[in-house]
Length: 421
Image 1: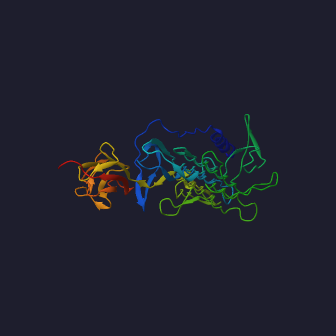
Image 2 (image 1 turned 90 degrees about the horizontal axis):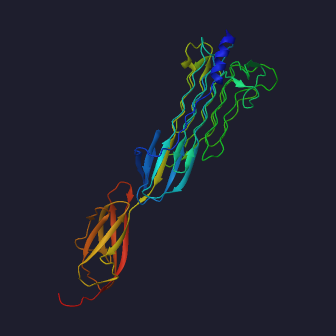
Image 3 (image 1 turned 60 degrees about the horizontal axis):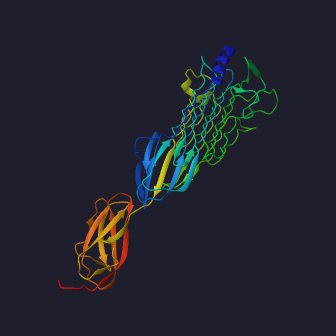
């Protein structure tokens, strides 16, 4: 019966894996990020999406960004009723995390794609395959020139592997199916998945399960699965001596305070402990974190008993200060005007419409207090009350949320009026 079951498992393991690629679209619907404010900052948060279009706000030239790939799913726990314990599933790797400040061009459009977390693999069960199945990899996240790839899946406990695959426990007990030379592992934990890559950089390795180092020696059954690689550090390998059944925590994530709170993104999933009871692995808890492996069982009747945890979705967070500014101009753009002559002063706003108060030598101009702009312009009808050099100023209170107050000034020479009134 074991031979029949192993053949089923082998076919499943060696079958091609179809991977869908998340690529930026040529066009997409407008994004609807969650918008919040912290002090002078506007914060826009994008969560899992197949793709949307975002336009850089007016008068915004740089931003702090956090771009996080999705976490991968953990592998399912093994089922092996010949032993007192079964191997735990390996956990999913974390999505890559990119944290930096970027330059922006106002009023330009870009596509945003946020990766979806990978699902956990099902566990082995009585009447089916005794090895747990691998989880699914996390999706990639794209924002402007940043690409944070998703984490790699964790392998199931008691998984198959190709002979000579250095990253796995090699039992030196080969089987041959056609032209494929493989080996099997009775109830040993699954390997943890590696983290994603930040803009094509290196990945952080997932942890290996417990392995003996002596040729042809029995592997330790009921061993813990390997933990997932984190966005900031590789995972620890399983023990090579002493306790073999207690799982290690995942690789470290990346801390950011971009939202005003300290959050750790992209933590590797924890490997599953070797066990007899079975349990579902925990899902990734913060954006980009990997799912934990499913706990092994010796009496599971359904594959969901030892299901691996799902990886957490990725995220994109943008933080910027939106400024309001203006330029002042006089009709014909003169450098001097006549004393008490009616002189239109036009303020052209950038960033946001708003209420504008005009001043001459720091004195509010009559009739020009809190004038509301329309189409980013507003006009004050000024009759100069001073001779000589006069400083005109416009203070702007923006009407668009998130924009900061601004001002503009210009110096004009006021000459004596000629002729009669």
